[in-house]
Length: 372
Image: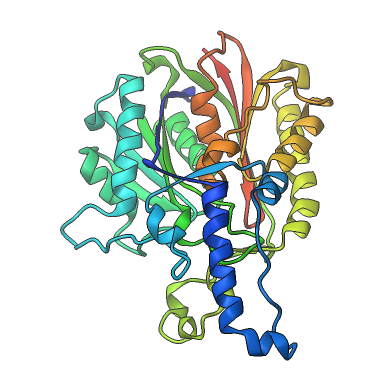
């Protein structure tokens, strides 16, 4: 058996940013257009008017101030309100593979590895731009990696589930060097016209290199333990599967894009995640006082503050539980990896931390790591 370790990580960040003020202006313009078009039905009491959003509401509800997106103009067009992403030909790299290539290259550079040394690529993300061939195999080809590749989807927990799969294979010796990459085009599955959720998501891609601890060429983090759990729930859902496209999608069903019952999610997920992390730590003999850092899924600041307090038994000190929500918004599976990538360089040998992601499923995955 071999000790797996994270030896490199990388983040691809799109160039375009949408601020809350810009988003609110576009949304309110859309709402005014919709209300004008449906004035007779509103007057008759048949439909409810769409209310305005505000930057204050968004920040209070989520902690989000900005988000990075692949296409800003399409989202901010009040007559459209979704991104314009050019359809790629079969001879061109896919959008997800292109993003992934950037993040993987950065992670490999940090690890001091050539892509030819990689023998496993896992593309773990909440939405995939096609059913097959696997996005991971395309990424493998663009990188020039060997071995094998496959896609994985456990919604917002995809990254930590992917890390567990890769770490287990490194530990057993079936692979020597793996990449887990999380290209998330969340702007394409968000309903930007829904006031309750129009501000939630952004686009990004993250990657981590996982290999044997003994093979590491520099600073790295030993993977001391991984743990995953799922429990079925309909409270976070996206029904836009291929079986529905020919018939039901023409009906303009709201459930064909991101949907969530936020209050139920908050009530049911937070105890599940807190208990999962504490149980995982206990199984490995870790105490709350051992932790230097919590890198949590970046869905909502209030949720993260709750989990951090439960796990540590106190309010986290500044820097103990870093948030990147204010800049990136919710980036699904990539959020906890962004936080890890940006807030792990200061840790010293022996410092311990937890990477944790959670979301639709319900699903939760935790990775216990120690700076080596």
